[in-house]
Image (cartoon, rainbow, N blue to C red):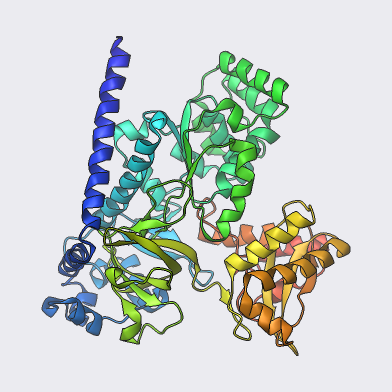
Length: 569
């Protein structure tokens, strides 16, 4: 056995043993979820008892969950805002206890056009990483051919900007990648610096330029739209990609003189052998698809809620590669960890944050509507409330979940949708998932190409919904009619309101091609141009929220939007 083979064998043995220990610890915690959660809560209260928030809420005299719940109200991010602003300004003691350092502020989209800033402390980072270790370890144990093979992971910069005190603000994925163990960092084939490439098309091309020649075992992203975009990049620029691999160069479309590309070019070498193999694939199959040049063990990304719509395109690009949901994972912390393929339901991360759940339609101020993790009913919907090591106590995450069962004493929860993305003009409670599902079924029935859209409520007599979409008049009219029909199928309240004329038919508003891409580009740039967790908003929830979409199809309208950002929220 060669020295390299011997070292790989040892590394593989160590990696498997570590993965198994992480998973077994996770399972042990599930056997006693209620007591584990009590310990988690006590640790977090003790760690932050001498913060201003802790003193104001009497943390030093809290002796039980009942004490905690009676003294600390459930709060949204906006209600925590004054404390967070003080931490961002350099006053960490506003939320955090003595000795707590802020490594960075993780940014994520808020309910307004301003991002949320989540303080990342060493404790928070350890919990976040441990959750990823359990997820990744179990996934690789289930797919052993992925062990010690290359990983395509898409990360965003951790330092899109800095506070006045010099603390980086950006994506926590960037910090995780930068601080990962050496053995793990060596498996990542996409340099984290690619997140700094300014042009989106150039950035995706650069990722594939580094990834395509490697023996990739699995891909991990947040949105399932990302692996599809990467795969399409290889298809659309196949000849350019093969030429760059052959020559050891990097000339992405739209790259220009981006300084990030200059640094990345120095890491590449010519690879004529791989280029010849790729040329043969292209000649044989007509498309440079990942299922032809990689032997993926699995794909890891979100599969629940509206994002499940993307999965229908996976077989074309990735064949029958299994998909493992990464769990309900927010910038504020991990909620669940799926332990098998093909389901968005995951086991609550009882050893990480402290969790409470509010009945879906209830007011959290009603204590009878708030439940601990061991008190949940299977088949019921709840809103998630978290207490985290970031100093967020009884924080309303804004996500709605359904309980699908239990793993020992820990609940299995499935993400349904963001709580804010529910529209109800007459009690119909239309969700974003229902809207996206109805549109996708309608589009496929009409055999129309993929296109972005927005559905928005509108007041009238009776009130109704307005569909904003690009296309021609006839196609748009058919889409609106079929979407109305599909919404009746997926939402009984909508069907009832339509049948009794309490809701009118869906109105069509045609947009210029690419107009909604401009909307998203502005919104994304305000949250960080490389934020991979950005999601297009299919459903608006307030009448009048779509006023800036009700415009003509002229190209100059689209251009003025991109400059002024008038409709971004």
